[in-house]
Image 1: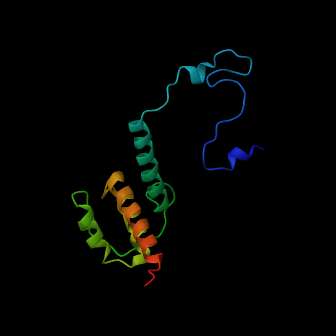
Image 2: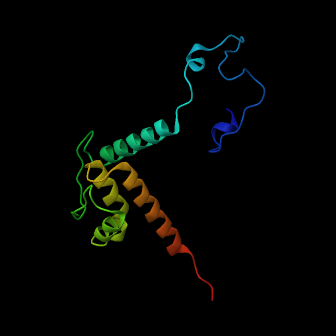
Image 3: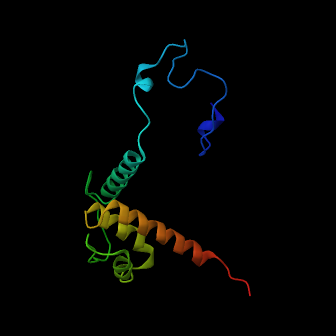
Length: 133
């Protein structure tokens, strides 16, 4: 098994057939005719995968699950600041789940959820930093 498969960073493979050609050197029709996706297409794929993951996690898509989160009044028209204020009403351990649950129910969009989740992760890292005097 190639060790590049275990690495999270893409590494260019050694000598071999060129991208878009088969082992015998003839053009590979599946990759030769399909251009690389645009940045917007990649973003849209990420958004849809995030929404689907949240819907599966909270039983909106797939099998039913029991949700034990304190109900928050999060909706699409809220700013990031307003959502953070609403999150203060929930236990800190539930913050990320509250954001994913709101996303799964369509109460916030994927871009806003992604920003808030990134901010929560950053805040968590700041809490773990020890300040030396």
